[in-house]
Length: 456
Ligand code: TYD
Ligand code: MG
Image (cartoon, rainbow, N blue to C red):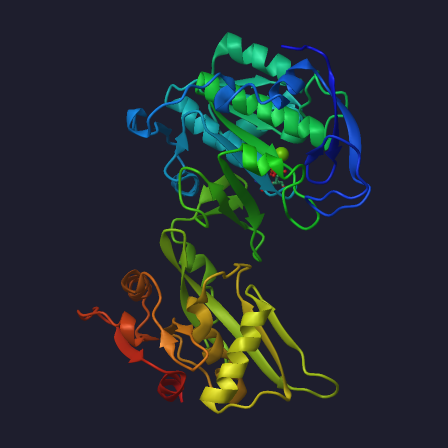
C-alpha cells in the first residue's frame, strides 16, 4: 500500500472532496470554498477505501449469520440524558453533542461521566479548551468524585489514541472536536479537513476497541453544527443542547440516532449546582398567569416518546396600514397561512384585514400537525376577545376541507393532560377513548365548525 501523501480538493464549508479544483462546490453550492489539502499517509490510505467500517478488512457474510447480540448500554445516571440517547450510551458508539457557548455541554458531560465513573467504569475526559485546573474547580464546585475521573489536556489525535491504548477507558469525552488535530493533515486545527480527519480517526478507534465517545462540537451563527457535514454522517448519534426562552432551562434534542428515536427531548435546569433533570417538563412550559387571557390555549405535543403540554398564544389585531402581517413563531409559517385559509372557508371567520401573530411559548419548535386545532382556537379566541378556560386543552390535525383528523398516541396525550389537572378536552372524533378518563370531560369533534361551536 502506498504511504505517499495525497492531494485532495476539499470544500471548507461542507467537507465534500473532489479530484480537481472547482469554483463552486456541487454538494453545498458554496463558491470559492474548495481548497487544496495534502492528506497524510493514514488519511490517503483511508481514502483509498481499502478499510471498512471500524477500520478493519471486512468479509462477506449472510445476514442470518450476523449475531443479534443486544447493544450493551451504559447508563449516564441522568435519565433525561439516557432517554435522548435511546436508553443509555451504547458501547462503541460515537455521540456528537452540539450547542452554543455556555449552553452547558462541558457541564453535562462532566456530570454524566462522573456518574459513569461511580459505577466503576474507567472514563477519560480530554480537554483542549479549558485548562485542567478550570475543570477541577468545576468538579469540586459540583461535588463530583474527582478521584475517579481521569483527565488529559491534549489536542493531537494520535497522542490521544496512544493514551487510550495505555489506560483503556470505556468512555471518552473529547471537548471539543474542533481543537483536535491530526498530524497527518497539513492544515490548521479547526479546519474542515482536520475536523473530519480527527473525527473519523477517533470513530475508527472507538469501533475497533469498543469504547464510547462523546465529542463536543461548536455551532455556527444559525445554530447548526460547525464543521463538515460529513461529521454528522460519521457519528452514530447527534444531539443538540439549547436554552429555552427561560434561560434557566436547557433542552437536549436527538437530531440523529442510530440507537434510538429521533426528536426525543430531555429537559434540564441549570443552577449553581450544575444541570439538574426536569422530571416533569410540562410543568416547566405551562407556567401561566392565574387569570386566563384571550388567545392563550394549551395543546399536547408528542415529543419523541412522551407527551408534552405547551401553551400557544395568538394575537389578532386590526391592521392600521399596508399589508397585514402574519407571523408564526415556533412552527411553520406556511402552516399558519393554510390554517387561516381553512378558518375563512370552513369556520366563516374572515381575517384578511387583521395582523396575526402566533407563538409556541417556551421556545419549543413544533414539527407535528397535532397543534393545528389549538392554533386555530387560539386565533379565534383572540379574534373574538373571548377567553378559553384554563382547564381546557385541544389537539388534532386540520385538513383542507375543515375536517379534524386524528393524531398518534391520543390516549397517552389525554392521560397526561388529565394527570396535570386539565378537565375539558376538545379532540378529533377518531381519538375519542372507549373508556371514560377520570375527571376529563371530552368533546370529540369531526369538523372545524363543531370545534368552534364548543368554544363559542
Ligand atoms: P459550560 O458547560 O461551560 O458550557 P459549554 O461547554 O456548552 O460552553 O457551561 C457554562 C455555563 O453554565 C456558564 O454560563 C455558567 C453556567 N453554570 C452554572 O450556572 N452553574 C454551574 O454549576 C455551572 C458548572 C455552570
Ligand atoms: Mg465547554
